[in-house]
Length: 373
Image (cartoon, rainbow, N blue to C red; front, side, top):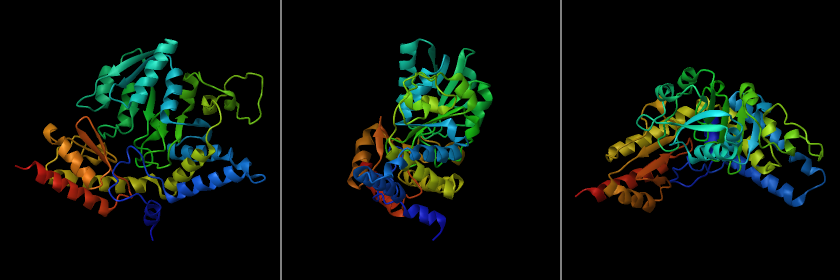
């Protein structure tokens, strides 16, 4: 058995699952961590609970290696949405992002602007639904201090050109939401100043596995508005109110979930063992098969086709009159996808089997037969 076969064998999602961009079913390794910690929490054997806080450091070490940062530049969060709140409340000046970014971005910007009055939202208008270096260059004004982009757009599947955007924004902060790409995209992480994400999608770590990672330059510019007693990295209560520490720990508030930390650590360690560079081509091959199946039945593909511009997401847009027919065909053949606004988002991982692709083909052929006069 090859290392890739061993990696794939860890996963056991049912055939027909093509919704990794929403939630990645966890692996056997992650499930084992969940069960082990559940047993520990239920029994509380003498001395066992000391292992709980160790999971934070373990997960930060793994994420630091994945994102090319030091462990002290990573802070674990309950979600990517909370990580974004930390970032936006800590910024002063103009912040540019497309209104089509995942809503967590817009909410964080709006709430920070409303509460503190020092962040000024600046809307980027995508070019044909895509945020490109040219879009950013032409629309970012001198008052903008930070630009927010998704590594992979959740709705269009576009893989953003991080290096190109880095070049056009100069010394402004580059903030990247990595939720839809970390673990399957071999991204140039060092060009980003801030990376937020969640392990519930492509990393397949389950819920509660958010993170905030930032380089030293970003830490100097971000104010840790939410900085609680756990930021001091002490398990013992200290009644003296101390200033936030220098590292990413400043963005900790209270106790995290050690079970979630263990799940995140385990899955990132597993990815690192194989290497993202080994996983990315497999994901591209699986999504290429999705494209072929869409083309076979004449479905319009509105996500990128070029390997350099996509990752694990394929988006199709049937004629408005046929959307319900497509949704019904997929449902009736047990295909799990995300459908919204007249489009269907399919997303594949390395564990996506030929059986799943076969089920999808049958569903699409049923759809084609139903719409033909």
